[in-house]
Amino acid sequence: MKYNGFPHINFSFDFNQLNSGDWRRIGLCEARVETLAHTPLTPDAATNLHRVHLARGVYATTAIEGNTLSEDEVERAIAGDLNLPESRRYLQLEVENVVRACNAIVQSDTPAIDMDRVLAWNRMVLDGIDHDPKVVPGGIRHHVVGVANYRAPEPAVC
Image (cartoon, rainbow, N blue to C red):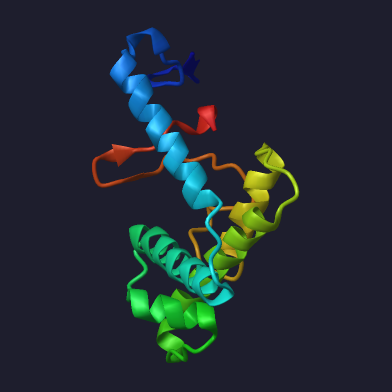
């Protein structure tokens, strides 16, 4: 299946390409995942693991968009222990918005992803953030965007 006319995006896979060794390795991976999934963690270990992964994910996500906070500053922002000068407060707000959106995704009672939910997450991420006047938080873009040599899909496809 091709995705919206982009030939490089393809969601099909021919499982007949796999040999018996591939299937064995997949089975071993599944067994290990099941073992880990059912290994109990102490509450402190679970909390720490969640904190570290959330901070690293938010740090990476916001850094891609140009946020200059360090990973330590992101962890402190998540913990509520970061006090930046007013000139850098928007960086903390970006982090807090992404955390809010991540929490909304995790706390949702349905795994379905639809346009309304994606637009709501976008509105959360952009809440209170200065942005280009062409950007409508929670809206679909109608202008061309890109970063460096990458050009996003045309607005008509959005």
